[in-house]
Length: 301
Length: 256
Image (cartoon, rainbow over all chains, first blue to last red):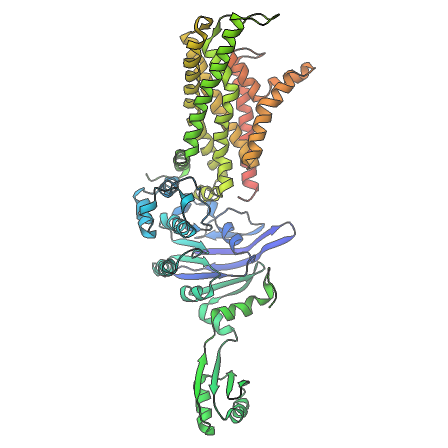
């Protein structure tokens, strides 16, 4: 479990993280979303003690990271695949890591096999592609078999196979009862992976809720109906407080009324229905609405 | 292997140091430079004895291991560069953030680096001194005086000096974080500043120079100077402690 209490980071007069208070629970994949510069990476760096909070605190399993006697056995974190010396072979990197926390060296081979790097583990990391470095970073996060895992943009640079693998890995880690806290810019990927979402913008908490709630909170859910009697049907739908917009000569978009109700109303009105479908909101739409006002480096939309 | 803590931090630093090529290259370069410098110094001594420059007394018979110790002035920069890279190399590549995730207590992390640097540079210094002696001996020929006691003493002192100076510069590196800045600082502080002060007009400047770690090291290795060897060692140790404390303070205050 990760606990943030009033976590704040200021750089001069700019506040990167502004009083974040939340809990990331075990047994779930919690997605961490926000526009560029929203403070996601800074928050994660404070959790593992790389950056000092200006105020508040970040606790892992109730304790500060810096106070953990063998931190890699408590928290596995992939913050940046680049946090590796390019002149060092991957195996030596993991071996030094294992030794620092008294982890058995057999575990190094285990995690190398888990991420599929065993064949290239003797090569220097500088020769690795971004995807391979991500895999090495994930191997490092898994090394101490920790109950808490954090990943900052883990699928960056991975091929579709790799993306699928990471999704399965995250789901599996959460199913083991571990705490999985993962940031990503890929909304479709996040929608498939996360159970719960934490959304921040300009360093502030915008949402901390189950995935389904966040999506339902967006205005994306709608019903599309195509009918020659569009005008007639629109009048009847408006009468039951539905929000109706004319998309085309014979097509309506209806909000506020479920799809089965639209079908029944059309039947009662004797209006022929050529096509009737529910338009599911996506996380992407809900996210855009949520963060629209807090985009740091936007180009206007 | 079940422990983390300081033993874990030491093991990790040891593994990291030997798993990059620059360590091996650096040590090989130091040995080569030592051989070269000892050769140059020995050749100079022989030349000055056989064809003394006008108005100068010939150096006469000199200590072979002392010639090697004299080469340390230049060779130390290769050794110091290796110690510097243990810190600034990690800042340059971002891997310091990995190191600090593995070993979050800043004091433990930097102490482990300093301890490993000393453990490597002491035997490396002994080896360098012996290399210089082995090269200078045949070159000096009859102008060289080889004394077993001197050889052992000079080799051990070279090892101690390079080990402690490595820890000193590691502390400076933790304060500055940049390879270029730290190497420049090392060059100015270890070589340029003492020479400038010693050749300065006032006695006070010479006294200040005697308080610098590299001058103390030179007195230690040459067996001269205004204070005994123990004081020279204390001076270097005090500078080292101050630099490491400074490094730890910066590590604690600044974000990684």
